[in-house]
Amino acid sequence: MTQKTMSEILKKLRILYDSSAKDFSTLLDISPSYLSEIENGKKSPA
Image (cartoon, rainbow, N blue to C red):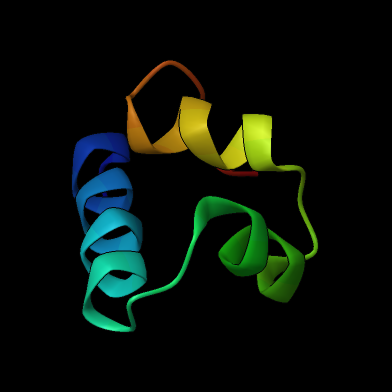
C-alpha cells in the first residue's frame, strides 16, 4: 500500500467515524501530531 493511499484511508476513516484527531490517534496509539503528519503525507506510517 502506498503512503498516499494509507494517509487517505486514515483520514477518511477518522472523518467517517466523526472522530477528532486526538481521539483517533489515541485509538491508534500514536500522537495527534504524528497522525496529522501521516494524513498530510509528511510521514509514513511504520
